[in-house]
Image (tube, rainbow, N blue to C red; front, side, top):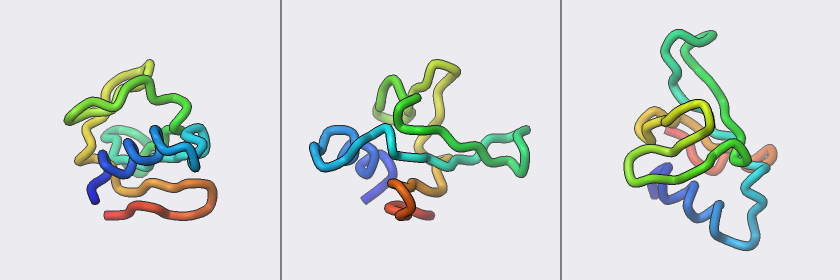
Length: 75
């Protein structure tokens, strides 16, 4: 399962609160080239990117997805 599949499952499955999801991704120019975004900040899950109010992030930049304290996806 890739990062897009994991996010879609967590967004649409009733057992998950998507606001509790944290996505760690490569962000050039940021501290240690890493950033994190909460599921509640995501406005759309597209085919190749996910969108937030501040921009689009390609799925291939995702390195880790957490739900609460559990890592559910990691490269």
